[in-house]
Length: 316
Image 1 (cartoon, rainbow, N blue to C red):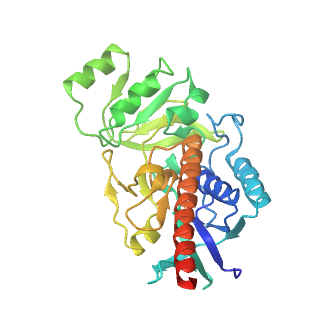
Image 2 (cartoon, rainbow, N blue to C red; image 1 turned 135 degrees about the vertical axis):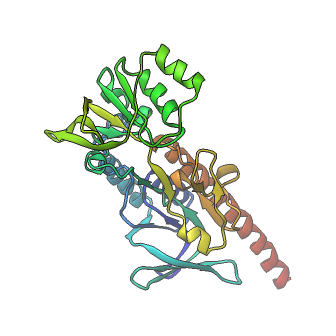
């Protein structure tokens, strides 16, 4: 094979992509990982619920994963895929930002998603530290503290209930959410959650962390952590260019729908990680990557076996 021709190209070098790459390389497949270098969890100081690596810095985890993948012969390129087509032969041509064209038999999309945050000053600055969204990723680190929930969607009440499990002092700022229903209001009241109506103007910051939530009327409510619900936007440009159609997610937004082990509705294309599962954590993404890698290898084995039979028949 030439230096730009591979069995499998994996778009995305996060936990899902690197896990898929290692799985395939251990089956002696030629694999390239095309990594645009935009890991979603880069702002976070630590990754949690990763068995054997509890609390590891996300970038350190990725570096370990890259080293393991390279050890099995995976080629990792810092590159952005800007276009993709499928030829009549069934192979894919992926065009990189520098004009290089990668030819591959199969594609695994592990490009992840982007968190679009509420446009409230202070949220972006503190994202990944004292502004967070997932109780399983970082909730334990703010247990027992004064927590505020910035209401931005109908799911904000559910989010409030989840963080109430971690602290007795939780305040829901209604901000832009629809009116809270009677049943939900009763639950919040019974659990001692304070509900503050009105728009939030900004987060007050002190010593690199949130100090208070400041309302539009100038009043302040002191908080030590603020929970938000980002809008999840999957990196799906390549999928749609290859003919795929995004599916609507029940919680809002869109995603790449998959069948068993990551197969998409585009022949020859699999997906793993947040591009296919908006709620996937690091560990879940790793598992999805392994499954997708195994499925791709099985598909290639079947194709190779068919080709061998056809070749023998031609020679006979």
